[in-house]
Length: 225
Image (cartoon, rainbow, N blue to C red; front, side, top):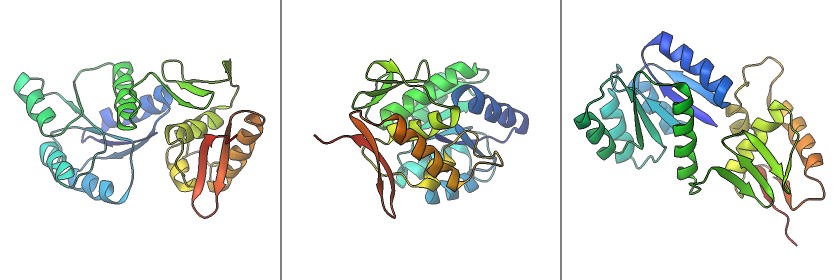
């Protein structure tokens, strides 16, 4: 899952990037400027935004209002030291989806992000499902027909992208950008094809499959009887 972090404190941003990648398995893009964040959100797709209010270029309130005016419905979690009732009410009424004051525990931030993303997909449940394939957010594990599915870390990340978008095609670039370890030297678009091939073998003879829509992408979907 791909997150845009909009935060102008470098130390906090670096710590959050490392923590969210390691503990949450997220792919994190960081910008320290509200105007740059707005331009990126016009051109790129993210699963959620972590937004600090006191940022340069375009402050957090203005960025939030501009995105909602544009009907950009990307889930937005406000992360700020301004922890007053009036501040929380104002940001939530302006279109924010959640509010977490500093200081905070990264475990709570991860749980809130997962909840926001589930709700944005219309699946406000602790797991995602496609056929008998289930992904449990609390344990970060897949189950297939009631049995734990053994996958490598990279297979896990790719399959999580596909089950999050189950029934919809996802191209290789979109999958790659959502991998928590996409900066690794050996990771590239061709590696995605290899991972998809391995996952298909693990899903053989079950009620779920990964289909290829040529020129469009890959789609995780139930097998049609």
